[in-house]
Image 1 (cartoon, one colour):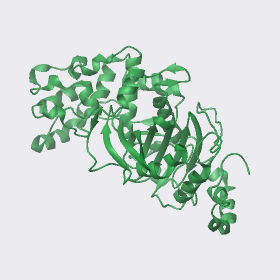
Image 2 (cartoon, helix red, strand yellow):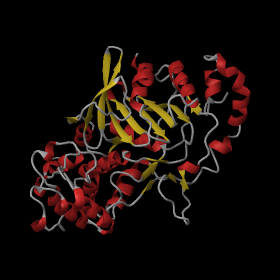
Image 3 (cartoon, helix red, strand yellow):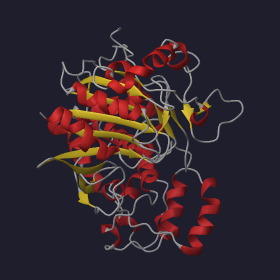
Image 4 (spheres, one colour):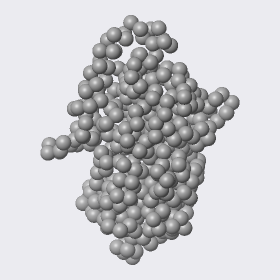
Length: 419
């Protein structure tokens, strides 16, 4: 058996006698490597958003579903900047993770497309199911907010902003804003407030309906101007309330665009993504004519692992400090608690839900011990989960809203690396 591209059924055969009967059929499918690992999936990225007829992109919903999952307990070094290791040798209980992979292959945890695990800086497990492929980018939804946060951290590292600037009003960075018509309290909205989803902005009722009709036609800082004119007055009380969305990520992207040389789009490309060797991605333009701060990006699972490794390494990539260390520490901390009533990806062993700078957080219970976890989260089941105590990064993608990624980590993955 080769070192890479292990078929789950073959990996689990010594452990699960029930798979033996189907080995021959699975092996035949595994031999058709070009069907799942090479052409026709090489050279394009996918998106769940409308694709123009002239585009060479593929809607991920059109990707054929794998008949069985593929996993690798000793991922190949592909020269993409990701260090690799071997499950069981470089950490982790191989039997437990392979057992989980078999369950994922059978669809027991929903429509999961990929699961990658990195331990102590090395990718030790890599697997793909359903519509997941190693070379196919995956729509990220709100995980894009985390990437926007990292872009802001890059601007701080390069000196275009400071940590103290996070507590200054966002309008102080936007020179095109006319302050004369802004609602009361507009000057109280800081980057810190926006990054923690406490901007206090409320556009409701008829004003919201009207604003929805014309907001797509407003470019640049004029969009922020309009938002801060249409909002209800921004009170001190409103600035303490967690309200997910509320144009916060778009406002942060406008600040990035205002302070960096050139455009936010080029800055993100050259100063963050290219530095990490990320090329086959998509990040679409959103409100205000800038890259969408909260969604509309598409990255491979390995790209997601790079983002997680960057955060776990306190902002360093290949020895270079890409993101200000102080910013990473603040962004990934639990700045506020926002309740356990609805934890996306949660379950019986997940509690203490909190929020940092476009990063979620929570406690994962394993036996009588809890582990603090920070995560990027995207609707549809995109997760980058960091567990600093174990130097563990877990990446998942999925084809629909999968509410179990954090619970799966607590129940199935953390125990394999905790001993």
